[in-house]
Length: 202
Ligand SMILES: Nc1ncnc2c1ncn2[C@@H]1O[C@H](COP(=O)(O)OP(=O)(O)O)[C@@H](O)[C@H]1O
Ligand SMILES: Nc1ccn([C@@H]2O[C@H](COP(=O)(O)OP(=O)(O)O)[C@@H](O)[C@H]2O)c(=O)n1
Image (cartoon, rainbow, N blue to C red; front, side, top):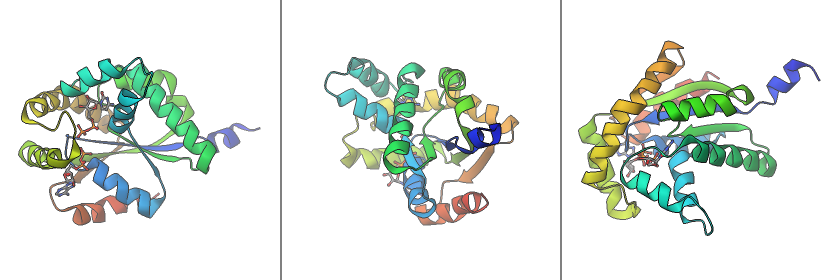
């Protein structure tokens, strides 16, 4: 096999970042419908692992989520890799939106050690939205989501983590010219009109 062949088989990925409540999950659903990517949310995978019977990480994950801290990358990266492998085997799809990751330096380093060479990073979608607007969206979502972190106390901690730990990761990718910044303040359909452009260009 030539090196060209093996690189063609690499999964294509887009990282999706933005503040809590910026609308990452909402836009990912739309991208899946229109462009055939598989959506892998790091937060959803962690919440599933938290409730999986026999998981040794349940309490650790819950403690981190409630306090807006980032779970150690060994756990999150293994969940993502496993989900990618399973998706590839069961559906043949090899294009992934990786939502809410990498969210801090530990996530970035862990991913780069284990996965960077195995995938093709297309770009990083970054949703920009004011803290006020994001908090309002999360509080509204909290009325029905049942999430233990959609409350004001957890949100303050999540925003600290976002500013201190996630923004440097966005800057890291910006320096590599990989970031596509999207204004996430308008309604979901309007935001998607802008998101679309990046995927149509692929
Ligand atoms: N563009 C938007 N305008 C208004 N509300 C939105 C928008 N995008 C998402 N929402 C709502 O805000 C909440 C957070 O959106 P979500 O996609 O879950 O964000 P994230 O994945 O970034 O945390 C949800 O209740 C969602 O319905
Ligand atoms: N890479 C990640 C992503 C999420 N998480 C945890 O999961 C929580 C919820 O993340 P999420 O992406 O589902 O939700 P939002 O904060 O984006 O609304 C985060 O606050 C972290 O505690 C993590 O530890 N590592």
